[in-house]
Length: 452
Image (cartoon, rainbow, N blue to C red; front, side, top):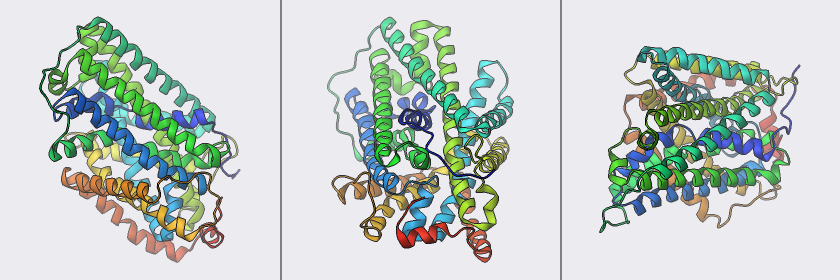
């Protein structure tokens, strides 16, 4: 039976999904990279505070967009209303083939890497683990949103409490490290640029809240809570991790480490600590995959709802309140990318390169859509207005421009493959135009400024 999204997600459910997307394996890897370009512990903490502030700026923009125009399509819905069906279609196409499916594959590779390490298997075992992860978690969400959100709550709880336990225990047992005196705290331009590439990568994913906006209870009032609470939890977690690492290892040891959180735990608890951290990384990766599966399928559903060529994706099952076909297609694409990435030297790095430029391009366009929608629908009911308009969205757009440049300048051939896949959506767009719009919903919404 075909139905439509219902308000089934509480603020807590929604925060768990967003935090699950953001607080992934990145925080276990990037602190050492950021520490390597910081001249002092103060500078390191400021980098992570800046990342939280810039994420807050973006979240304020999204709070207005999502509370004013709630839709399971998220950014797809905003871009369609602001720039027309072509922009929305290309975004949905890129999310289905590059951004979301690539992100699922990327993190699934990390599940495979750490599972193979935990069970003492060779590197060739990572791809089967990755494929199995996508298959199992897709099945969980096909069963229904209740199963998906309960799984997410459990995984996020394990991550947050597990990290708190590991860090507090490690600090309690480790001798506090001393930092050399006489270092500055204001970064140079090069240090700032390098650090923020990795800091913002680690903060990435908070915008996924937009894709569950149609399912949040009392969405016009609660979307701003979901975004602000999520940013607060993420920023607090990241600051806690970095302060704990500074105290337990010190800046020089952080900069030299390749597995910085595991090194802190191992120094305090030996091999047991390292094993616990490996398990936490696995849980964090599983949480990110599950949350990304939930939010990604919503865009596919919105694409199928509006375009006849993909109408099979626009099937929302009453039982389970979930877009089954959209989930299955997403899982199939992600599995295909895993099989492609398995043939590369490092599947995880390839997926980062594949997704980053396309992601930042459309995030920039979404920021610009706020200006267009403000002007086009001045009388729309707004649950929240971004403060200091237009300064706040201008800052957000400038950050996106810089990150788009960095994604193209500092990545390899994978980024160009992602751009080519995005451009392959143009002929598909021309074909679907011949098929026409399935239900004409966005055309009607644009005329009256309403939301589904």
